[in-house]
Image (cartoon, rainbow, N blue to C red; front, side, top):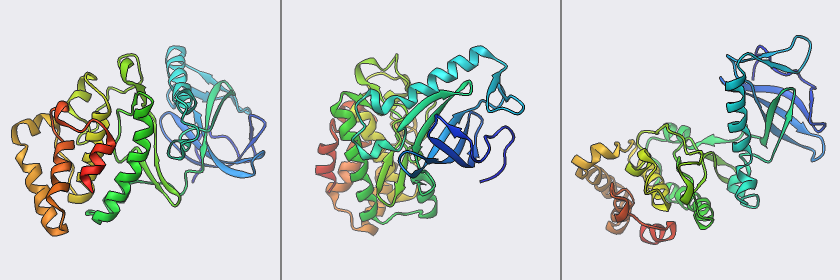
Length: 291
């Protein structure tokens, strides 16, 4: 927590129900506040769209003014679209997704997104950095929890498309997957799957957003498992086309140390196939072979 230029002050009331306690952090596009939900009697996190280069706070006011209207409109639409994902795709009752957005509203010339209290969330990426080689039972339990979320997405005809350790959070009450990029499988081009590629976790079809499906997320999930078990990030699929054997050797080496059965090793490598047609088509098929 700290003091930032242009942040909302302690005690500010938003949408007649959220009272700002403090500013948690800021990025180039957002402020994050800890706030009291006055109706529910609990603490929440409120994200405020605030573009550092285009927004200024009006002196003595909570309102903002914009220096570039075109960028403002584009960013506002994207911010709100992401806030609507949970409700748009009927994921309100799925615990792993409720963290991302439980409310949103417009105020002060910008938009706000309300989330669960994020202070106790531990990104899986941070967990992996602090635990270079994760206990195999723990790793498989996390994969099982991630699968529970992906199963719901896939059963609704959707694909996550951007799953990686930065999109998975560990909490005392379970795993949270951030559904930041969920999109209908039959409408990927007009969806919000970002152009940015996270090295080591994206399959080859993800690069061109073609032939994507549940198998795309299964690849990413297997890459996360690979990272947890070996402590190393999978190479990009283009490189793997030439030297796929190295990944198998590494899995086998750790398989011996961790006493992984051959069936588990084969399941991981099948899920990590560069060719999407050779991968598992459902998370259940992957899990059944994995354990």
